[in-house]
Each structure stands twice: as structure tokens, then as C-alpha cells.
Length: 433
Ligand code: ASP
Image 1 (cartoon, helix red, strand yellow):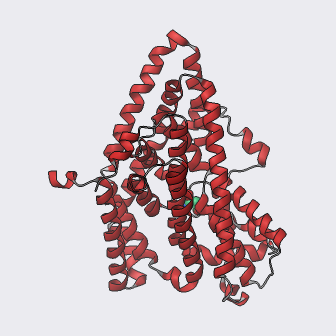
Image 2 (cartoon, protein in one colour; image 1 turned 30 degrees about the vertical axis):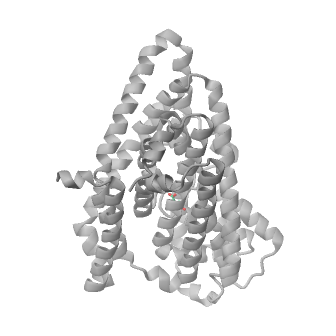
């Protein structure tokens, strides 16, 4: 038992991920694809659900307590401006690179070229329209901006509306600062509460190896690698582009922009990556991302708690890559020639969709209709493409979620370093095996 805890958590989690993958596939090929899914869900599913519930439980209190105490720790509301500006700039910059890479890959690999339009004849896309609603926030742009302001912060906390929680927490932190001496007990309370909730996250993370094992097992038993048969080139294009983006863009940020060694970063975020990969939800992964960035990468709580929740909601580079790929996939399947102007429009759409998509499974795919329509597909045909990919989306979603979360962590590290809220010693300490 003591030996178990001595092994670094990230190693345990990665081994669990591989074991879950292997066990799931073994089950699938042992029992047959029809029986293995329901069997795995029935017997192991609960373990994955338990872990998911545990980390989801932490999202709201973790963001609320740490963000309020983070704002108070900054001591000066003006710092929030520079921090917010830097984070947003980096989020946009990395997403722009991601979209470009996605479009280049889609043009070279041509994932949809071998399909002919008649493969879509059996697709039932009627369910997609209903599912789409969960993947986006309702209303137009102005309305969405307005909705960031909660009319009832307790309701925002209760329903887990992260942007509203961020908004209220920042203002409340500023309020505590403005209350000066009278605000001190509140400051102390949030400081202590945020410390405590971080510890609870560490307890929950001890469940991660089991949770990740179970989640991977269920996905593999249920879905297997079927995606490779139907969407092999799309899968290849996405995995490859995400890997290139992680290595070149995020690696470049860490190594050349921040002048930090790369190994500690990779090691420090691997827990969050494994949880992102097995849950397909950057929202659910958020508590793990915050803990990794703070505990392993040495970024101050104040930065981690403000930059990361924002990133989990608006920064989705993997999703942006994917939307570009899906748009080209659709064009190729329907034999449409894409003009330069359409490329630009798809890039813009992919960026907007990646910002608007919720950090939940398959959100990116469900919202890709906008980009497909830019490329000249009718709404019906756009829905056909989405309906065609949807049953196989899981394995694709896992990779883009991993990329989304890695991007959030890279930006948080950069902002932490630039804002002098970064502990090099802690970061370097990860540079061991
Ligand atoms: N599942 C992704 C996420 O949570 C979003 C997407 O579907 O691309 O980050």
C-alpha cells in the first residue's frame, strides 16, 4: 500500500490509462463488440462515474474559493487587466495557429476525399439538432455577453455556470480588497478555504488511476477502434495535427518564449492530459488542470484560478483544429472546391465555434455546422456530415480535449511567468524521473 503511494501519481495514471485501453480492447475482442459495451458499462462504468462525480463536485467551489483568494492575493485590481489581456492574447494567438495547422493538414491529407456522397444515405441526423442545443449557449453575441453577469450568483454557483462564477468571484475579490481592514477576515476565510479545497482535489486525484482505468476500459469496450475503419484519415489528420500543435506551438512557448525546460511541463500536465483524454471534457478536467498547474508547474494559485477556468470555457485549440478539418472533410466528401476566401471564413468560424463551444463531450462536432455551411454545404448536408461522424466522435474528442487542456496549461504557465507569479524551483523539481 505504502509502495503504491510512493509511485508518482502521473505514472500511476498513465499506466492506468494504458491498462484500461488494453483491458477494454481485450473485452471487446473477447466478448464481441455487441456484448462488451453493455458489460463494461454495467460492471466497471460506476467506477468511472464515481471519479467523474468526484472531480465535477470540485469545479464550482474550487473556482470560487481560489479565484476570490487569488484576486485578493494580487492586491491590486489593476493587475487583473494586464493578466486578462495577456491570457486573452495568448488564447487567441494559439487558436489562430491551431486553425491554420488544421486547414493545412486537411488540405494535404484530404480526409474526406475517398468518400462519396451516397455513404450518407443511411445517416439519421434528426437527433443532432436536439443535441446541438446543449453544446452552445443560447442567444446572440450581445445576449451571451450579457449572460456573463449573473442575476443571482448563488444560482450561478448552484448551476455551475463557470463564466458567471468567474465574473462574480473577481468582483467579490475586488470588494474584499476595497473593504480594507474590514475585508481582512473575509480574505483570510477565502485563503483558508481555497487551501482546503485544493487538498480535497488532491484526495480526489488519488482516485484518478482507478477512474481513468475505468473510463478508458468502457470507451474501448463500447467503441473500440471502429473510428479507424470509417474515419481513418480524419483520425490520422486530427491526432497528427494536435501532436504537432502541442510539440511546436506549446513546446515553442515553453522553450523559446519562456526559456524553460520542456520535460517538467510535459510531466507536470500529464495527469490533466490523462483525465482530459479519458473524460473528453475540459470542464470536468478543470480541477485537475488547476492542481497540476499550481502544484507541479509552480504557477501561483491566483493565476491558475483565473486563467484556467477562462481557458476551459473559451480556449479550445484541439476543437479549432477539428472544426477546420471537418469543414474540409465535408467539402471533399461532397466534391466542393474550396476558395481562398472560404478558407479564411472557415478559419474565422472555427475560432468562433471553439470559443462558443462548451467544454463537454462532442460539443465541437455538434457546433461544426456553421463552418460546414461556410464551405457551401446546405444545412441538411451539414447535418448529414455531423450525423455521420457522431457515432465515432469519441476517440477524436479525446485527443482534442487533451490538446485543449494542454493549451490552457501552457498559457497559464506563460501568464504566470510574465506576471512574476511563478515558482521556478517548483517547476524544475518536476525535472526528475
Ligand atoms: N470535448 C471538448 C472539450 O471539452 C470540446 C469538443 O468537443 O471539441 O474540450
